Image (cartoon, rainbow, N blue to C red; front, side):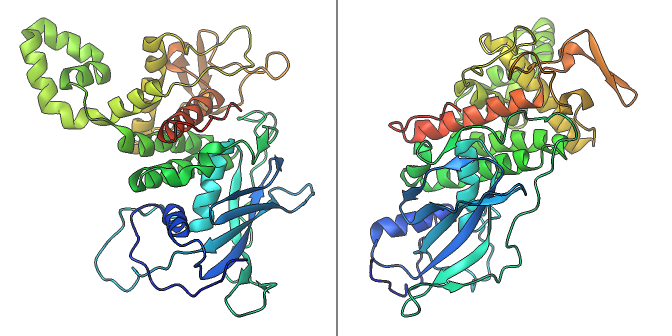
Length: 388
């Protein structure tokens, strides 16, 4: 066992908390202050154990019907000391809204594609004290809130049954290799994804919004800022671009696009990110009602409609279309329709044509998680991506 030292305050505050703690562990592996254990709660069957830097996940053997259950214990060596709390000026560039165990659980949730959250501390090891540790439950949140159950069929089918092994998420064990700013973006994206799938059966509309937010958190960090303003405008407003070209030619289009460039970036980043890191379609698919992954224009058309709905939800209070928040139609063994079928769908006194209901929620979750893992993989190229 390494010698436990009481650490001095450190000025390393450049990335996410879970990242900075890892960097300090690499720099001084034998110097750490305290070690704390937290339960990791899930409704999935996560197997195996894992050690990654100062983080160790141990299987608890918890078997009970109540969900979520403490499947694993997360043991953290704390190399990080908070020396920012005595300062008076605002400094929140790495703020994720979470502490170390929560950040780790969010990254684990994204990497495995299952629901995982950290509970409060349950045992603490301090220098010079009982080597067996001391029971500790002071944070008032021993366990996370319950996972809402489906009323009938699940909106995200098969989520608790997804294969989840701690030997698979190589990107997680290589997290310390990304840059500080990338670590913050990854944790923010992971948190949005984690919250999206945790409450999907109770609040599917919020799941749509959080999945979009997960993409935006990553896209802002990734964006190469190289797109031409005209290309950006054509992507965001194709009909307006055609109208301007007819009325005033390319010169007018260029002037308007340049003027509106600061306002066109969000849509472009969202679509470019999901296109650049476009995942493969699911391995099990129905015979009809398929989303088009192959044709880029069709692929982006559906995603742009999703982004438009999200903007209306945030800025006009218009909820996501109800038909897109319902469980998908099942077709065959483990096959679910990916898009709306038929000519139109109605709900709560409103009607949407099929082309205005581009995909079901489980399809968007597959695209978002696949793209986020694709970007994460690009930051640590030798790490294999998850295929679950």
